[in-house]
Image (cartoon, rainbow, N blue to C red; front, side, top):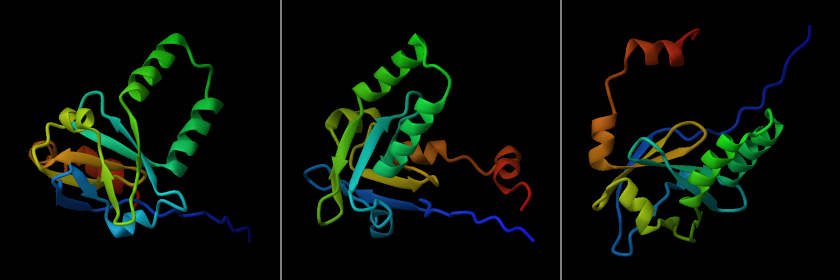
Amino acid sequence: MNTVEVKVEELFVGSFHHSLDPKRRLIIPSDWRGMMGETPRLYVFPHPERKCLYLYTLAEMNRRLRQLRESVAVDAQDEQAVRAMTASADALTVDAQGRVRIKDELLAHIEVQSKVVLVGTLTRIELWSEEHFDMALPAVSALAESAFYGGY
């Protein structure tokens, strides 16, 4: 009998409510810091349509870059989209206390005052202001339930 070995990676799950400190830093949960590997860096991108930020580990960014390079030829429109996303992105270094400082321009994108929500969405972390997160979190719909729980 043949068996298939599947490598299961750790996933970002759960949500954490935090307040920004006076220097506008936030703490990355310790469980999540352990998933960053030897290089405690995160890459942060503003979502083009939602008032949230996407945070990716170095490993996930490398995986996405490989995937992009292996995909079909990138056209001018794709290049423009990548340029728009990376122009406002930032690389964050996680300090010894697990804190990161996010640029004011990125915090302005999510319209945060002081309270934020970090949400684990499997392969990335989303950062929301508490107000926008509460508005964006609908009840579980039949479509979402079907997409996530289908077959289990």
